[in-house]
Image (tube, rainbow, N blue to C red):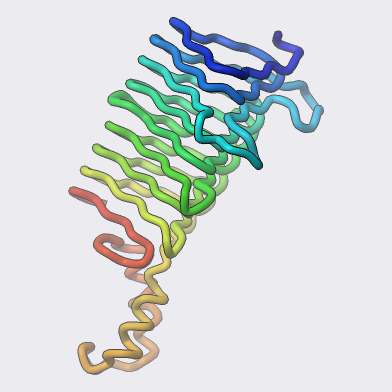
Length: 239
């Protein structure tokens, strides 16, 4: 199947699932007692090849899932796109060799390590997008990690970006232990909240020149971020 597309449909229950194809599309309710391995090999220079797609872009995804009793290992030459549910009991590994990973619904890692590795971007795309891990979560991207939904981790979260990490004003990132963020640019929308509080309650702040507000706000963004803000970053221990 390496040079052909493969589409999964219907209700599938198996001991394990191992598929290699040009593009892999899941439109079914798929569960494996053991593991699920998908490898979308793609073709050099062919647009739209080498993708793994779980679910329907415009459709009902409530009964579409890829669920493994042990581990999941997905490798796509280009993009991994999740519109439905991906869940696992132990380790979860999603790798995009030359593309990006997009989550529009639910990705749920288990008691092992959850690894998101994308050559370009990882986008947790909207307010319904949820990425969870029952143990540790590691996100590594060559370009941007953008979160518009929820990223939640029971233990440690490490995110490394070659460009930027962006957490939208309505989004949340939290862990039960440590959060480590490494990027050229860290953008968390703390700045608008500070200006709003200052404008409404200026008397609670000690007197200092107004121009010092701006570096103070950016120090909140870039140096230490924790607690309850519109862009919520919460760690049980250190950030």
